[in-house]
Length: 113
Image (cartoon, rainbow, N blue to C red):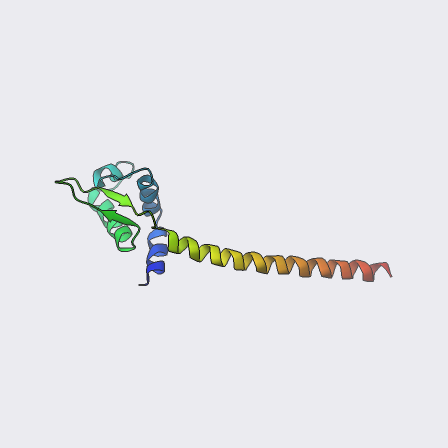
């Protein structure tokens, strides 16, 4: 899977998005990340593996403590892709708005004759 597809696949799951939101506040262990969820630490570890494989987080090791942290550039590629397509859609909608305005002016002109 290409990196952008892996990012969007990882972000498709609400639990993983919640984990990323938590990691935006700072690093955390699996146990800390599992606290707000009704799931085992093993299930959270599986979500972390997906996030790590997508390049969104890194996992460290300090003795027995394995903190996960959000990568600073984690969403750069996804953001760039979205911004590029947002601009293209914005341009298309602006062109459509101009076309609709021209059609309305034409209808007003034709209706007044």
